Length: 70
Ligand SMILES: [Zn+2]
Image (cartoon, rainbow, N blue to C red):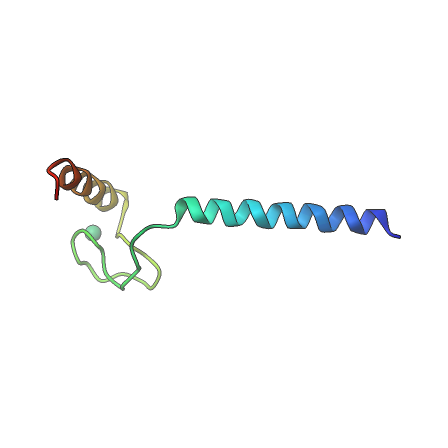
């Protein structure tokens, strides 16, 4: 029985769960499609928006759309 290794495994498992949870929270409902979802600017793979401004504007637009029942 190796308690130290056991603790290390537990810590690792907890960290993995933490990471999964963080990813789940941050996981956008959008797919990175190679371009900005707001202004359609070409982007590097994995990016959703060119900058925070585009993201904010996009989210504002989405929120407005939801409020309008769309
Ligand atoms: Zn953009």
